[in-house]
Length: 90
Image 1 (cartoon, rainbow, N blue to C red):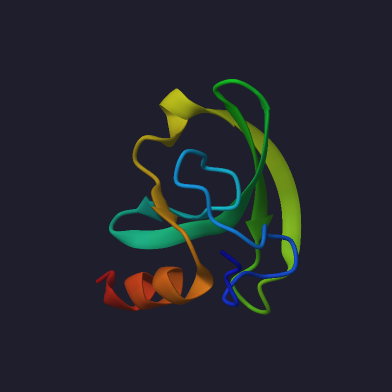
Image 2: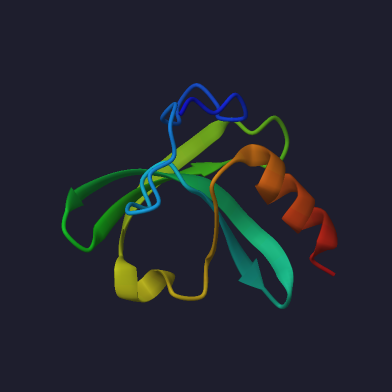
């Protein structure tokens, strides 16, 4: 089902069996320190994350992460949910 809240770099549909397309927030000391989008899973258990600037939400860089390093991250299925959650974090 198409999701109108997705950005141009995100898939049109949300698949709950995959992290690809999810918006992520990384917290530090209770505050969002980084935000991005899971862009791809090039190999099982490895995820390519496209990090975004807070001002303008423009892409800044990409990096690879193992799933084990992502356990404290917060994942969201669309931008509206991520924004509402970020407003509630401290």
